[in-house]
Each structure stands twice: as structure tokens, then as C-alpha cells.
Length: 443
Ligand SMILES: Cc1cc2nc3c(=O)[nH]c(=O)nc-3n(C[C@H](O)[C@H](O)[C@H](O)COP(=O)(O)OP(=O)(O)OC[C@H]3O[C@@H](n4cnc5c(N)ncnc54)[C@H](O)[C@@H]3O)c2cc1C
Image 1: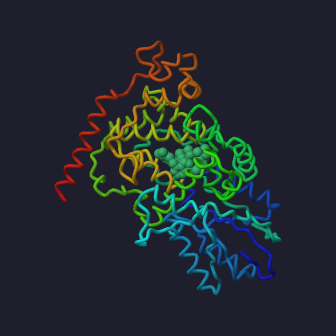
Image 2: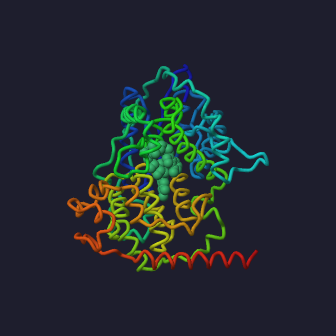
Image 3: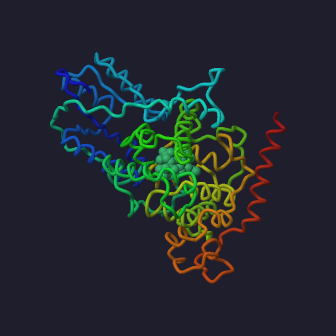
């Protein structure tokens, strides 16, 4: 906020309900990130816990501020919160200015000729690209910051709110090998990745190779703006084009959520809400086997163990693990999405829920339900040397390449394959057919 004398007072409000509902990974990262920000501002960040509407009005009065600035957001929760803050500040004779967004193009900006939201990613990306090409001047220097003596912030600890029953006794500890938080780490990563961006297009799907930016958490927590990524990766190359496309996906999903807030927990394709899924105790047991990385399919297990230990997972591994949960285990995509939100350091409502819906074939275009990833064949394609499987499934550390794709029949038996892929594929297609026939009957 801008104080009466023109100085800037930086404020971070800890919203307990949000922090309590965040899983262990995001809770730990957020705290570290805010502390790093405070440090880089010379200890001048005001960190308060409470209802932002009350905290900001009190603080604005205390420092004589009439203008409070916030970055716009896309989730239903944050938009409702910002509306409440706006009303409270207006009632107190102050103003809330919503400035820009954490996206290249703010959600809700791009619409079709018929003034509706883009339904297909390809069309959205074509409209998005000219906006990305506009070179932004980059972050401006920070004006004078005012030191405001702050109370010790109260960070919620202890029990998490909203832990669903099917998590059973799955772990609540933060991942032991989580990447460090803070702008300095993010900028260092951006610089090192920027030098390798040309290889991104050809190597980004190789799960065992460190060829992607790993900037998702920094982007999610606002340590970096995506325009900083665009600026560092200017120039024509296939790698750059592929990377920018991923940033467009990020904006696209935020845009979809902005227009369709219910898509947070409901399938974008209404007919797919009736897809038959298992939800009983045995389903919960299967869920736990998947979440612990004990399915017997190395690519899926390596992915789920990477999530447990690092709080992050390679994009291709996310796709295969998600597909396996929905199409081979016949569980609700929302169960998997919740687990990812719980464990991922970059957990983001728009990208996660729509990433899941895409994999489950119930959301935006491109991955129809009948396309089913085979985790063994995927492993041969994206982990051809078994590097990823050996790294995370320690039982496979001395295994042959063939065993790293499918241990059964080979020499290593670290976990019995929990399902027969061919049989469950038939079952998945039968359930999908029920939906198709059901909706055909209705139309
Ligand atoms: C089931 C599933 C769940 C996902 N959940 C999340 C999530 O909670 N948070 C999240 O940030 N991403 C999510 N993604 C997208 C993607 O997997 C991650 O953004 C990516 O793996 C992060 O690694 P990176 O930073 O190295 O990505 P890079 O490949 O370097 O891409 C650069 C940036 O583009 C964005 N991006 C890349 N791929 C996608 C994508 N498919 N959709 C949206 N944005 C993308 C991210 O911000 C990423 O940091 C999910 C994907 C799937 C399939």
C-alpha cells in the first residue's frame, strides 16, 4: 500500500483457512518464500495473520494509506476475497487497485469473435501469442519502503483442514527433498535454464533428464512473473516455441477457471460427471497403493515417489500417473487431484484441476477418454535407459532397462503389478461407453 508520505508499505496477509487447507508442501514453501521476501526487503515486509479485509483496513488507517494495490488472481476463492477487501476498503474511504495478474495475459481478457471464452487450446494460443511477443520493460525498481514495526507473524501449524478420508494414513510431512523457495533461487534457475532452452523441445518429455525449467512453484507463488521467463527466452528456436506454448497452457487453464469457476471440482464436459467410478473402501486401498508408489508399474511408482520425496513431478509423469488412476484403477479424478494439491509444491488450482481433467478426458479438448496411456510403453519411450525408475524406485537401482519398464517376468519383483493393464483398459472403455450411450439417449 502507498502510505500518506508516498512510501510503499509491503504487506503479506496470512489467511489461516487457506494455509490450513494447503498440504504440507505448500505450507512449508509459502513460509520460506515470504521469509525470503522479507529478508530481501531488509526486514520491511509487514506480515500479519487474519482476515485480509480487516487487516488491510486497520493497516491502511495506521499508515495513512488511501491506495492499496494487489495483483489480480483467477481462483474463485481469491476473487471473492478481493471483492470483500474492495468493499471494506471502500467503506473505510480507501481504494483497492487490482493491477495486472500473475499471467502473461490476464484471465478473462481474450475472448472469441462471439465474445465467449476460448474452448480449444489451439485457438486460445493463436490469440495469446501476439500478447506474448510484446516485450515488457521488466520489473521496475522498488521505491522507498517504509519500515513498519510488525508483530511476530502467526503461521498456522498443526492439523490440516479438509483432509479427505481416503488419504487414510498417507504422510503429512513436507517432502524431505523439496527445492528451496525464494526469488533468488528462482532467478538463478531461470538463468541456468535460459541457457538450455534450445534443447527444451527435444528433451522436455524425457522424465529422467533435467531439461525443463522447474519454475512452476516460483511462478505459482509469484517469485517470478511469466513475462520474466519470456524475456530471458526471446529469440527464434523450437525450444522457445515449445516453452511459450506451455506458458500459454498455464494462461489458458486460468482463463477457463475464470470463466467457469465450478470447473474447480466439476468436469467441464457435463456428461462425464456421470462416469462410473469406484469410491468404496477397496477403492481407497487402491488409491493408497498408487499414492505410495507401489503399483508395480515403475514409471507410475517413480512418479508418485518423486512427488512424496520432492513435492514435484515431471509433466509427462503427471500425465501417466493421472491416467493410470482414472483409467486403470477407475477412481475419481478428484481424488488424484486432491492428492496432487496436497503434495505438489507448485499445486495450482487452475493448472492442476484442468491438468487432471485433461488426463481423465473430462475437461478441455485434446485427450479423449478412449486414449489410454500404457505405462509400460510410455516408460520405454520417455525413460528409455531406466534412469528415472532407478532414481526413485530404489528397489530397481541395479535392474536392467527392461525391468525398469516392467519388472514382472524379469529378475526384479519389487511390487506385484496391482492390475492387468489390458483387462482394466476394457473396463475403462466399457464405463466410457455407458456415458456415451447415456448422453446419446438424452440428446
Ligand atoms: C495431472 C496434472 C497436474 C498438474 N498440476 C499442476 C499444478 O498443480 N501446478 C502447475 O504449475 N502445473 C501443473 N501441471 C502442469 C505441468 O505438469 C507443470 O507445470 C510442469 O511439470 C512444471 O514443471 P516445469 O516448471 O519444469 O515446467 P516447464 O516444462 O519448464 O514449463 C514452464 C512453465 O509452463 C507452465 N506449464 C507447463 N506445462 C503446463 C501445463 N501442462 N499446464 C499448465 N501450465 C503448464 C508451468 O508454469 C511451468 O513452470 C499439471 C499437469 C498435469 C498433467
